[in-house]
Structures are given as structure tokens and as C-alpha cells.
Length: 257
Image (tube, rainbow, N blue to C red):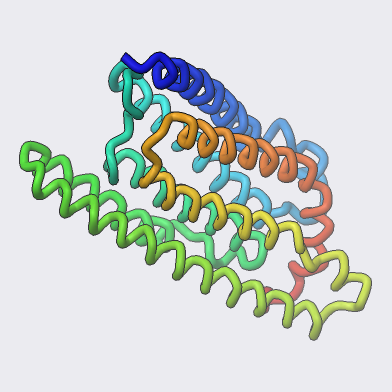
């Protein structure tokens, strides 16, 4: 038995447990809007975009915490990494994170893009893949085909969501230029949102690469990377509340936003 592999497996186990705790804490902080938005709730304009974005991120962090715990504790950590190539659980995590991060960042540009029918329509393919997989769970060959199709769908998600984000960002920036003063434009441009989306995209691409990871240390670095990133996003959003209220008070009167 490879003692180095076992040691790396134990480190991976510890990092995953820490990740679950951190991501669940992040989710609770983001979803506890009533307690964290006392001041903005009393202002003239309630930051609808910000609230929508935080709800999407809170749900994303909760999903990754629950799914990581479920995948981790399916069995003991042994000599080999516990995630098989293109597992349905990993695909659900990756796909749902791509969707929810896109919703969260787009919400800060255009709240009309965040509505129940649209969210359901985008979640539907994920649910269909999971349903078909478990219907044919006793047929390994069918499961492999479903996971390959799911993986292809995830790649298309990353491409399409990136295009949609930058198209909507351009519309938002163009509208700012036409309707706001220079000071308002500089205040409302929201470059931080773009940075978050690009960083989330990088994590999504790293998630693609993670399906080919065969060593515990590689998986440990991946889990550590997205855990640090999620914590940084949480801190950013917790301190963004007042600024968001100011931004939305400027842009709310214009129906083009």
C-alpha cells in the first residue's frame, strides 16, 4: 500500500471537510439578507439586483457544500481518488455552479434576466440528465453516455454563458454612457462584477480539467482554489450592499437598465 498516496488522501479529506464548512458558512451569510440589510432596507430604493445576486450565490454555495459532503462520504478515502471520471455528482456541481454564478453576476446588470421561468428553464436540462441517469442506473453503458452528454452540455454552458454575460455587460455600459454623468458612470460601472465573472469562469475551466486529475494532490489544490475563491466572493458581496443601493438608486429610474 502506497503510504504517500494514503497521506495525500487524508490531506484531501481534511481540505474537503474544511471546504464544506466554509461554503456552508458562506451560504448562510449570503442568504441571511434580513439581518445584513437593515440599513439598505430603510433606504428609498431597495437593491433588487443585489438581493437577487446574493440569493443565487447563497444557493450555489449551499449546493456545492451539500454535494461535496455527499460525494466525499460515499465511501472511505483509500489508495485512489474517490471521484471517477465524469461522475454525475461532479457534473451536477459544475453545471449548477456555472448557472448560478452567471445568474448572480447578470443580476447586477439587468434584474429582468433573473426570473423564475428563466431559471427553471436553465435548471431543467440538469434535472433531466440526473433523472435519466438514475432511471438507467443499473446500465453502466447508458450512464456513461448520459455523463458524456452532460459533460458536453456543461462545456456549451460555459461558452454560451460567457457570450451572454459580455453582451449584457456591453448593453449596461452603453446605457450608462448615454444616460449618466461622468461621475455616475464611474460609480456604476461595476468592474468588480466582471472580475468575479472572469474568475468564476477560470474556476469553471479548472473544473473541466479536474475531471482528468488522477492524483489526490491535484484534487486538493482544486478544492482549495475554489474554496478560497468562494470566500473572497462572499467578503466582496457582504461589503457591497451599501454601494449596490447607491448604484441602483442612480440606475433605477431608467427603464433600459
